[in-house]
Image (cartoon, helix red, strand yellow):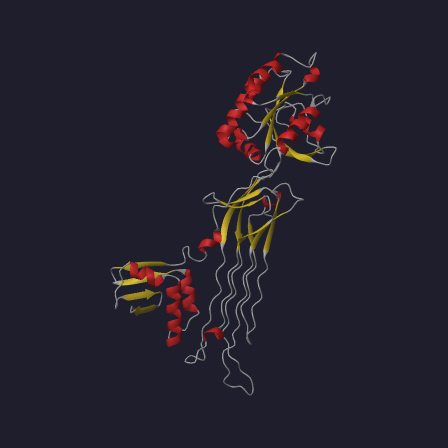
Length: 428
């Protein structure tokens, strides 16, 4: 089964904690603080790999995490940086936030490598908090927490030309004849259950990438069958070739088939109909003179709309050269801009601000309550009993916006503030 979708949980590395230590040597009994800084946590990085064409690597494993940074050490030693986590994906993969469905990154065009989740910064050791008045600080800064996020990986095949049409009209046969692709071909419906790509080469060394988009059916835009899974691969193509059965071997009506497919394309995304189209009227090898009423109807219906009809035979090769050169000419006249989707969501934009703390008022105790994992952790690393330690913690509250939130909730001088086991009166 072609894997073009995956849902995984990624987590960056936590920053290492700053270290608390003091220089203690034989002839330096009262040395100053020498606690080193913690190491930065590892990043989660997505990188394209040209040897990959599916997301199969993510079908059986769900959680991926970068390495945490190490804690700082004595003698001003820095903690080791956590190892980055590099996740390889095929070009054309879109990374979305699973909760909001917003795009985080599109691994297409020039975007071959992107940091999606940065690792937490390492905390500062106690050496950074020594002053002339406080020469032996007994606190250090904790490392920043890791970021964790559930993401959706969605592969949209990158091809210049997409072959569209109902099942069993000859898309795979045409692709195998004009490119190096070797798709599975048989005489029954839905032989193709995955997009197949191939390169069309010309004598001058130029060419383009062609994709056989699996057969569409009526209602595909509403998700009937494998509609959405197939339709999304058309979004990046620049030109579409409608392939129809001109010989009506299976009793289909080619004119109506094209109308149905265009209707499904428009319902899925209206911009798809703005792409140039041509029609390949296939299976003329079984016609007596290579022309019939079906081909005449196709030309009468669609050529006034600027959609050229090419009678071809994917089996014998008749008419294929004319079709390919016409498509090449269309591509040459188009802007050579890849279809790349703009980011809509930056996970690190709210680093440590989301759900890091809450500020509420408890009417029963007539006190303002500040809670949250970040507050609790900082309390555990700070010596509140010392004047300098308390000022350090107060600056932390100011930097995090806690004092501002207290003021917005109407706190007055002398009011009580409670943070876990700590309780104090508020004064500016």
